[in-house]
Length: 418
Ligand code: AMP
Ligand code: MG
Image 1 (cartoon, rainbow, N blue to C red):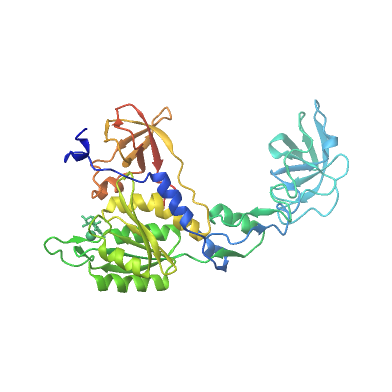
Image 2: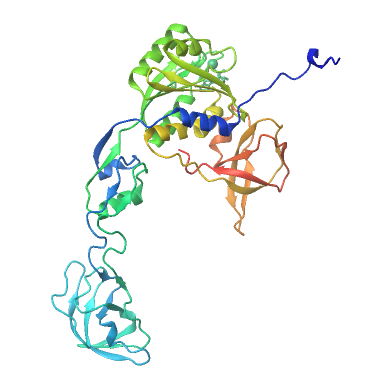
């Protein structure tokens, strides 16, 4: 018989949920919201396309010149001798040449002007000598050169943009090129959020003893705004049963998703837990992740609930890894996290095996194009400057025991996170 079961110093059973599993469970638990609206194109920046965009016209709508030069018939060009052409007119962008180009004839043409009837080739003006109405074109020109064909970019009837994409400057440009002044987008996702904690003081107030300023509401507001949500800031909720109940009822009545920070560590979450159990459902997870072990996921009436930890870096790390993809799915788009890259770490990184770590790093490309990364100071989950000085996460696998100086590590650039 062994004494190991009774050993009072034995490590407690650690049952932590792997990050990837937590992410896929959260994604499975949410669904896109219903509702859309028609918006003028300029107001649609950052919004999610609700229906495919179909082209009503060819783009370009007509064959036109890619160069300033001379439009001729390709068949008139000789491979190894210069040829002389007669200049018969000009074609400007917006003002076509009103005639036809015959054998031996050329039309002065500007970029974007309609290719005149009969012509099929444009010779760059740099390759041409002009003397009055005589145009001399050197050898070696290619028939068909410098012509942009009708429908080369987009064919009428074609689906140009699929529903569910986020409208960024290039997509707005494509829609504008089709002449469409309005676009149908998903309605904004309404997200209510608040901070919990008796120690929290609003900005502009004096700090009493043991008090701290509420910074999480500002990072959450910023991340939600950049994500394109309609943000509903419900302030700071004190650690009291009545306050939590009222805030939850208020939030659930107006939002598709509710986010809180703080109050989900062990022994602390009682009001959050009992209120959610009464009004909906809640699941507490301990995730194999650092920072950001505790996370509460649930439902509050019809709204989805995300209870993030209180420490400021944990709020951002858990928001990016779990909440952002879930909210993106609710908004009707496919989560598209920034790619994971490899970088060489300049200094040793400390870590104990057990949890996947999101250390904060600053990456830069060296002269030879290799990415280098270094940690941005102390890695405590209360140290917000580690985040504000960083431009990427350094992701160390759960089983890893750290990295030596010069080792390759995985990084996730912040670009693409909101
Ligand atoms: P909690 O999860 O409520 O135990 O909070 C963990 C840590 O995060 C504590 O040091 C809190 O004081 C801190 N914290 C909680 N909420 C906020 C907030 N809104 N802004 C800044 N720090 C916070
Ligand atoms: Mg607290």
